[in-house]
Length: 77
Image (cartoon, rainbow, N blue to C red):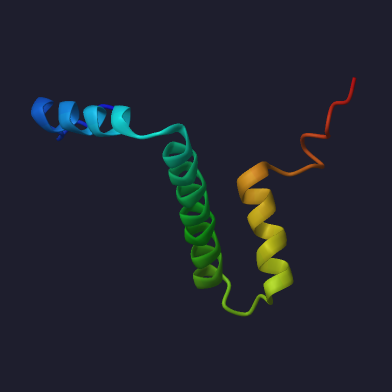
């Protein structure tokens, strides 16, 4: 990760911090980031479509996050 406005010193500190984390801590962070991402998508959809009920929001979230199954059918061996 190398954002344009991140200083070299800040990026080094960030990487060192990540390297000190245990596997369990890293996994926990991944799950937290996933939940934050889902909440951002949910909030955005609710803002765009205030008339939609929770079922419609959840269905739209699945399409937004995982794609439309009609456009990309699952492939099984």
